[in-house]
Image 1: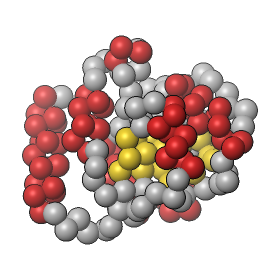
Image 2 (image 1 turned 180 degrees about the horizontal axis):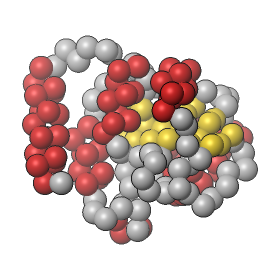
Image 3 (image 1 turned 90 degrees about the vertical axis):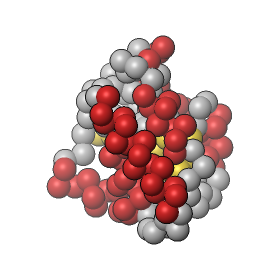
Image 4 (image 1 turned 90 degrees about the horizontal axis):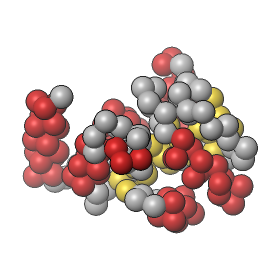
Length: 158
């Protein structure tokens, strides 16, 4: 199963619509957690919110995660060893108050198991591909230190 999650704080109809557009072409079923979105998917199962008690089970059952660039979801994908496709929200499209998610994917792009989709075509291609999962242990101490440093700096500005 492919799990699409947009978080619970803001809608992200652009992501939900994109996956819904080509969900019927995918070999795996799709479950979308659409949060506060107003778009109603036609080609995939969906739910407004996944209960916290059920979230880990749904995450565990997924073969790939598609998400906004929320660091909590990235860390959960790492914990479960799931590949994650990140679609950053964009302030210019009214999806967030600033472009911190673009900065986040800039720091995370290229890490094992993390894929960044800047277009619907990127997203579709990733979903049609057999993506590698991240290892549970990152062998790069430098990579870990870089990510921790970035997150500390970001959190200091919030």
